[in-house]
Image (cartoon, one colour):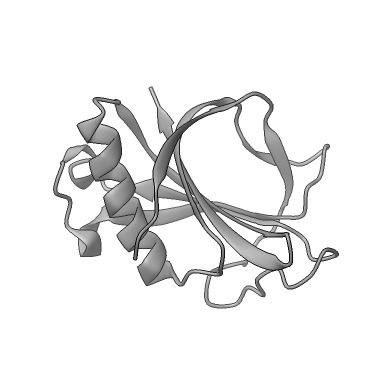
Length: 139
């Protein structure tokens, strides 16, 4: 799977309503313009998150939180800041997201960015299709 990694300066935070119990296995990905956005935040394994060649099966850690909808008064946020950023114009499975996160990490480290140990995965509906976005903060 080819996913270009870019540097992104997110100027404003994206806020979401907390969605306790929401996981990849039980979520409904956005299917139209009225569908709520989804945001998942995962911890990454501290050792694997700092390797140029991380083991995919060990990289993803615990789900920190999940959110639904764009809610300006939301309880959880994707903070404003500097990120390595990737997106694909379809819904990706958790396994595909991990593969993309590995490639994103390799690209970010190749560019000599110091990356945080948190991965944000966002799903939204845009231009007639679902979009999957991965954000990893540069520190």
